[in-house]
Amino acid sequence: MLDLQSQIDGLADGERLELPAGQIELSAPLLLRRSISLQGSATTLLLRQGREAVVRVQGAGPFHLKGLRLIYLGEGPARGIWAESGELHVEDCHLSGARWVDDRGLGCGVHFSHESRGSVTFCELFNNDVGVLVDHQSQVRLESNRCYDNRLSGVRVQGYSRARVSQNECRANGQAGIWVTGQAWAEVEGNRCHSNGTHGIYLSGQSQSRCLGNEVSQNPHHGLSVEEQAWASLDQQVCEDNGLCGLDIGGESKVLASANYCTQNAWHGIQVRDSAWPMLWQNRCRHNQHSGIAYYGQSGGCAKDQWLEENEQYAVQICDQAGPALNNNRCARNGLSGLAYFGQAGGRAQSNQCTHHPYHGIQVSDQAQPMLEQNNCQNNQLFGLACFGDSKALVRQNHCQHNSQGGFYVGDQAEPQLWENQATDNGSCGLQVVGRSAGLLAENHLANNGSYGIQIGPDASPWLSANSVQGHTLSDYSCLSSEVVLLEKARAQGKRMAEGHHLQLQDGEGKALTVVLPFEPKPAEKLVLEALARHTKLSEAELSKVAGTRRIAGLLESLQEKLNRAGLSLLQNQGQGSEGAIYAFLRP
Image (cartoon, rainbow, N blue to C red; front, side, top):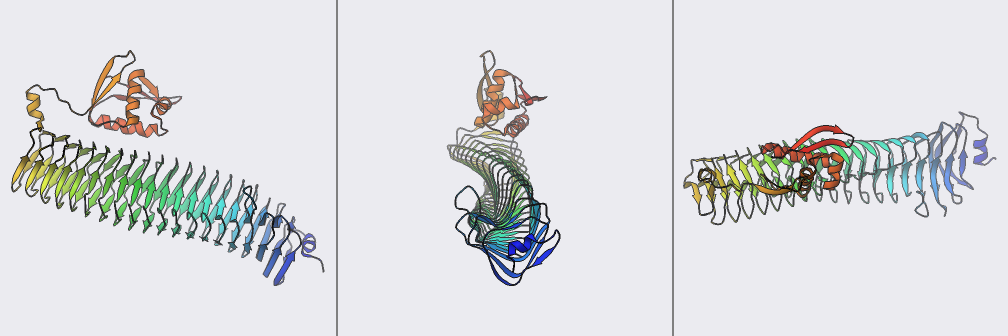
């Protein structure tokens, strides 16, 4: 009887070889060159000696393998199936034992390389280095497979390859369940990735991925992580019970994440870090052990229409120098406060609903200086909106109502600017200013807030102007400080007003120039203004070098918006040049 290799070599193109049940031990790797089909019936192909693969596929194909169990038990490096070229379809096969002996390669259950193409469906891939590797410029469909107990990843897509990865279960792999890297493109849909060594799904390099409806749970790191310069569209994932975060967005990645559900993760529902700048829309984060969404580093982007509830700490926490735009989010019943700013965080929060928190609806701490506009803070146990530390927030047109302690709080050495806000029907006071705080309180409306409308402690020194206060049981205005300045009275007396932050600049001739800003600029914003004052006109590329950030367009947009709101026309966009937009400094 001919051995198996001889039988295969005797087949014509298009023929099928049916293999009997039982075990066939190979003396060398099988080599497939003609377009044939191998049909097993609980057939095991076992290779104890040899290198590179149990089955090597060469030629144009198509090749079909079905109903086989391929096991490698050799000492050298090898794959289960290696598609070096052509078209290969693997169905209902079991592949195990593929491994490499050093870091120069990967032992894969199935390896698609070069310009191969094909599919792997209804297979089990276990105890390999990697279950399926899609590499180089190959194009592959992976569907309804089980990838488990592999040393590294269940599925890895890399190089310039393209893959559709759908309805697979990837569990108990040493690193990620599914890993897309290099410059690969992948459509990742309806997979269940759980209990892997690091991540459920990991997207890195300069890869591009569309992830839809995946379940990523019980992974010790993140459920789904996007790193480096990867681009990803993340829709309708369920990220549950992971050891760190549900979604992790870092590096300089570009992400659109919508309608994802992140719950019961040990840290945050969604984490944004480094210089990432994602668009988050209509995600729901609840019952996470820290925050619903957390921003770190110099990250930003926009979070709109989120539903953030019942997280252990905050709905959204913004730390370091992060500066996201938070619009129309619903923050309710989180363990501490709704929105919380720390470090030197900035950005803009507008039209958010922050209700039913044990602490505050919105809190601003440390040296943070966000813009807070048109937010609604109701039914919080302490204050609707509170400023602490050395923060310098711009607080405008917010409404604080039915909070147990009060509407607005300014403490420590905070110096916020409160313009045109409303505080009504709060428990104790409309606006409390204590500690050694200062700031500007102008044109606010305070009505029916228990005992006091405005309550100022002995060491506070705010500036007051045109506030409307009425309907309080003890006093509309209670002041224990001798340092309070009434703007109208001071102006009538001809006193110079030291309003805002004084920035000392020099023009191109070395002449001193003082600009009074209604906010303290961030270090990068200060560098930009100093450079523009000195040179009069600079490109985006030049300003990027000055500020030390690649996110110069967002920084300039935010700075120009803050200046315009303060009525200061210091920056002017003069159109596009060879190195991006041209910005000019207009002398006040």
